[in-house]
Length: 74
Image (tube, helix red, strand yellow):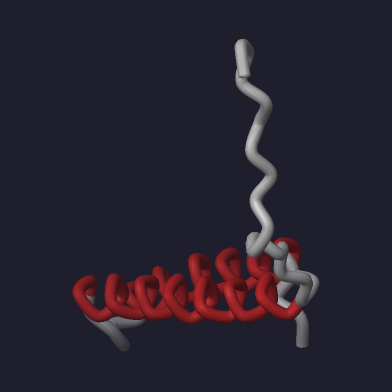
């Protein structure tokens, strides 16, 4: 599964809707909800980073030869 911005937004929306419901039902506390939201954010950030890394080309610029600029008066 690719964690595109659209998918991440849907996950955030689902969690943001489910967590308050769990609090209202007394299944989790406010402190637990904060931990859940933080964990989901960290999880999605981690996978977004992985996704970004896989989409970047593996080209590395060669800096072994540096062109020195021409300075006026030389």
